[in-house]
Length: 120
Length: 107
Image (cartoon, rainbow over the protein chains, first blue to last red):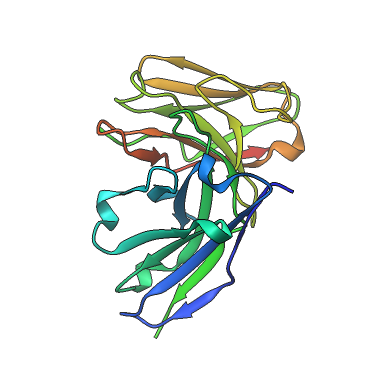
C-alpha cells in the first residue's frame, strides 16, 4: 500500500526541539521529493521545506531558515523534520507530503499528520 | 504580492455550482494546485497543474486559470463536498506557498 506513516504526537516545553519522522512505503523513496507542511488549529497550510534523497538537496522556507532541519535515511525510506527553539506558536499538526515529481510543485500523497503541542 | 488570496468562505446549496478563487501575482508563471481537507483529515489533491484532475476525483471538480487568478469549480455540489479548500503554487522566488484556505459550506 502506497502511504506515508508519521510518528506519534509530541508534547514539548518552550525552548525544546522536536523531531518528527515520516516513513514511506509502497513506492521508491528516491524517486520523489518530500516536503513538510504544518497547520495550526483553525489555520491554513504552511510549507516549511523539502528534500530529495536522490539529489541530496534540501530547501527551507525563509521563515524557518536556521530553525528547521530536514534529513532522511534512505535505507529505511524515512524522512525527518527537526524544529528547534520551540514556542507556543509552533503548536500545530505537522504533515509530510510527497511531491508530484517532474518539477511539479504539488503533492499527491500526505502523511496522517503529527500533532506537536508546545506548552510549559 | 507573493501571497495567495482566497475568500474565507463560500456557501452554496446542494446541486448548485461552487466557485472558489485564488489570486496571486506569481500565478501566471506557476501552476496552481487545489486540495480538499475535511475535519481531522490530511489534505487530498483534487486539481493539479491548474486544471488536471487526479484519478479517483469526481468529474464535478474542475480548475481554470486566467491571469493572476485561478478558480476551483465544483459543479452539482453534494453534501460530501463540504470541506476546506486550499490553493497552492509558488511565490516570485519559486518557493512553494499556500493560500489561507476557503471553507465551503453546503447549505
